[in-house]
Amino acid sequence: MILPIVAYGDPVLRKAGKNIDTDYPELEKLITNMWETMSNAQGVGLAAPQIGKSIRLFIIDTSPYAKDEDLSEEDKNTLKDFKHVFINAQILTEEGDEWAFNEGCLSIPDIREDVFRKEQITIEYQDENFNKQTKTLNGLVARVFQHEYDHIEGILFTDKLSSLKKRLLKKKLANISKGKITADYRMRFPNLKRK
Image (cartoon, rainbow, N blue to C red; front, side):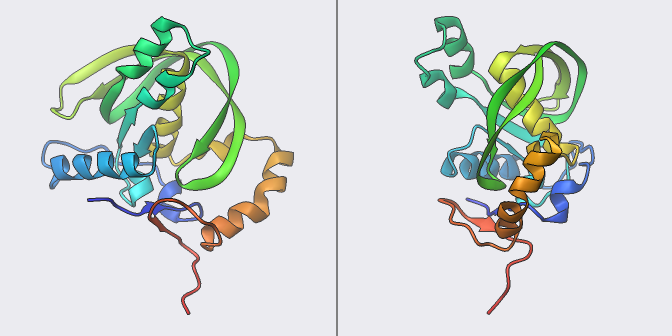
């Protein structure tokens, strides 16, 4: 089932998510719905807060990035095959130089900005079967992970922009929260005025 994506301005996007365990109700169904929702919105990642659930769960599928002609074959293969569920994730280390990449977010449609993030991260998480995993991620895969991880920490990519950029985007962000935007997918707007 395709769920509505929560728009900028909803308090759920500002809450740090809670850890979950194997008793979480209908988790398998929730994960299936998240995959459908993300695919429908043509996203590469979706975090539970973006569908109104304040829990430490997100999914990533970077295969759409594998079509980029400028990437090496190795990078294309990494991106093509990176499709995972992350439960109770933690970033253990962040290393390397910060690099800029133009990021967007399904909760903040029509806004894209350059965000600086570290090149390499080491992470710990549980998969959909609650098996503990540790991985080191690099480049675009690390970037997408960091973006989704921020969601479960109550952080949005716009928080990482300069004060000037934030001021320039203030009206656009307010309009998103009021539903004064067109998105190609279902959304839930926190400040939509009912007629």
